[in-house]
Length: 87
Image (tube, rainbow, N blue to C red; front, side, top):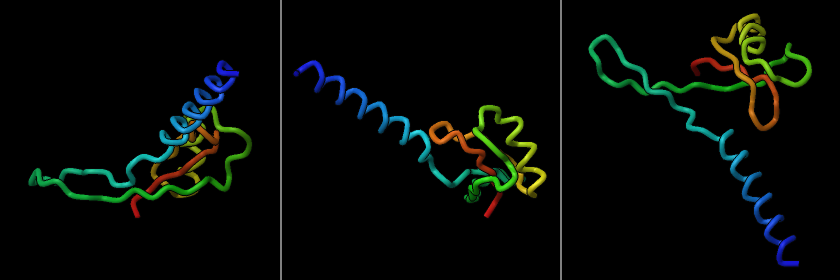
């Protein structure tokens, strides 16, 4: 019984860890010509054209560019294509 509780606890921690990797900071620090730090926000949207599970961020990036976004990446946890642009 104790062994199964350890397995359940370890699985729960692993799921939390995977979920936490999806929740990163939304703000991105950029530099201007005068070298001052400028706070810029990056918004994420699910792709509407990408079909199926996302395993190649390169394919996702090209699909997002067709949708007028600047970048795209595969979500590690949900395997969805996520497009990004400045808010």
